[in-house]
Image (cartoon, rainbow, N blue to C red; front, top):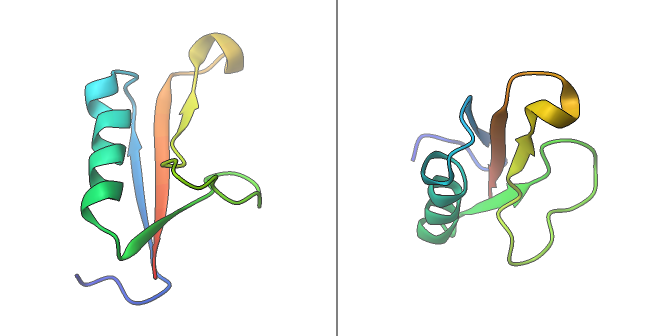
Length: 74
């Protein structure tokens, strides 16, 4: 890929459907071992075996819903 080592890739969508959020993020994480999930917000590491997907729920944040995931090239 064209992302340099240590570079970050951000996936952000303004939908809450599993097919466009968790399914995409899980598939990308599985298919790209050279990329590691990193936290979207804060400094806490992404737990092992998880994608790091963060969902912003409208009813919790009084906003539009969206989902965000970030990876870093190893």
